[in-house]
Amino acid sequence: MQPQYTQADFTGQHVYAGIDVALKSWKVAIFLDKSFHKRLSIPPDPATLAQYLKRTFPGAQYHSVYEAGYFGFRASVVDDSGKFYML
Image (cartoon, rainbow, N blue to C red; front, side):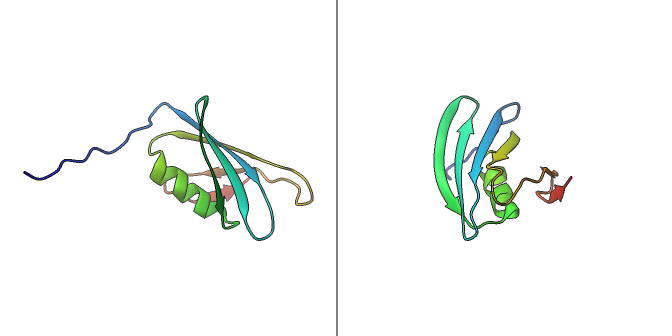
């Protein structure tokens, strides 16, 4: 018998990413609705974060905030294909 796999579906759930930006890496804290998921360190690239979120939490609504310090801040949005657009 072949093993059966089911795809996780996070439709209707909210995923929050808090980002501490730095030149060489971003430290990211991920929360799923009101529960802590994990902390991770990723390259400083919005597409890397989008790819992680879409792969780990397919169908969810993604929200992110980051420290507006030395680098200032920039609003952005991710479309369904995972591409970032700056507003």
